[in-house]
Amino acid sequence: MRRRFATRRQIMTCGAAAILVLLALRFAAAQSRKAADTMVLSVPSNQWFEGPGVQVSISSDAKWALLTHGPTMSLFSLETREQNPGLLLNDLTSIHRAIFCGPGILGRFGQRGSERGIFWPGAESPILSTLPPDSIVGCSTDGSEIVYYIPQNPDRQVFVGPVHGPFKAFGVTGRITGTAFSPDNSMLYVLLFQPSGETSLVRISVHELRTKTIAHDLDATPGWNTIAISADGRSAFIALASAGAPDNAARHRPDANRWLAIYKIDLTTGARVPVVSTPGVDNHDLALAGGSLYWARNVIRDSVAAVAVSGGDSKDVIVGAEVPMWSPDGKKISFTYGGWRLADWGLDLDAGYVHVDADANRISARFTIVSGYHEDFPAAWSPDGKWIAFHSHRSKIPVPDYQSAESTDDVYLRLADDPHAPEMRLTDFGWETGPAYWSPDGRKLLFSSWVRGGTPGIDRLWVLGIQPVTGQVLDTTQLPLSGEIRSASWAAWSPDGKEIAIEDNRGGEDRALWIVRADGTHGEKLFDYQGTTYGGLDWTPDGKTIIYGGLAGDKLQLFSIPRAGGASVQLTHDAGNLMHPRVSPDGKWIACTRIVQSKQIWRRPLS
Image (cartoon, rainbow, N blue to C red; front, top):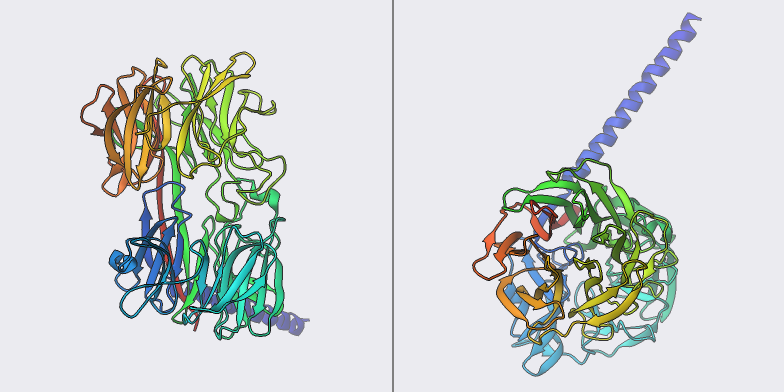
């Protein structure tokens, strides 16, 4: 018995020691892996929703990083961490997009005098290619082969060949979201977003003219994607929200753990394992260059904050919230929450509120006030507190994509105190509609919106006449603003309802503050200023001052300016970006969105 007990004790001791050794090895491996991950560039953003959507590309020689959002681009050296705008423009009049096409070589989509299209580097100056100007182009690592497709082409084809042609056409099924060549350029890999919400990974044998589906149930973002193929051609690295098929209903939940991680996919079996994952953070836009894995990471901290109307430091009211609205009695603040998950862009936004005291301190838990499928903006209470108005992309089913056909883009009305009351859709013409604001008498709603079928990015102002008892829309009016107002991106009623203040987006960072009468006439420009996004504005309750968000140095801050005109005063000097000001009914506090965000580029050696 004694010997048996001793043997068992020895086994237990050895087993415990083995477990400790295993844990130590795992800890050492984790520490080694963490130590191997290096942040090579961090670029702060002074924008709003635009920041998370900035796309990152890495040159095949790992020397350059290209950051792109629409027509806005920045080219950074990963060696010096400095920008190089001259190299980016390179003899063109303007540039709209760019891609790396070989080690440090850029293909440019832009204009040179009267020439417009895609330019390739030439011996003396860029050469205009014969590719369609609206093409999306991808290049092989060595720059010898290209793939291009036309996003709006209903035929769903990709064209593959040498830079200057000829090209072979391949038909595909689904919306193309990413492409990549194998290391020897014999294979083209294509990511295809399907109407079901799943993404397929397809391999095209360029020379044998054969196509094979590697995986059909990837949980990828419906938008821009990148693929990186390993040097041995056996694996692909792709950003996914999970290892399985996407759950479209989960896409609409603000609290869903659906942040992008980098997965390694076996190109023979389709099996996938995560290699880079960060809780609550998107890792995306990956590349293999110089023997290392590179990827981008979105780091965002947002909150609804409060600032004294006289200025000073901000204080958080609630973290993870944006775009505040006060209740008429000043005891509640509504906001949008959910985060900017790239895999579920906009779908996960709901509207909530918290109770606050007289000093704008939060005194309650977060309550949900508007929830449903797709994006919901904050609740604007009517002056009598009976109704809430809000902008929503409401859909009847859990759609997989921000632009799904089943979604709307309009202003809605609902009884304020009954979350189960019917949502009344007030408009049917919206396109990127903004928040809705009540007139002081509770009989009108003011909001900005693009004109469907018109020019993207140009906001017009609309007013809905509302029957205050039933909520019925009595009339719909597009305000006849002066042609000098380019884009009315944000607007607010004066306290007496006789005037409207407008943030005019003039293009680029140019902004102007206008005052018009309630019917949109007699425009008066107060002054010009700088901004980078929808800065927002509001009036103080006495109607004498306008608070707005504008650029101060490299950050958005809050300013005030007299309605009668004069010099503006900077109210805040915050370490973050402050925007979307709303003044409390008692005139003591400004609630605003506060954001600190950056786009980071990370590197992990693969050897």
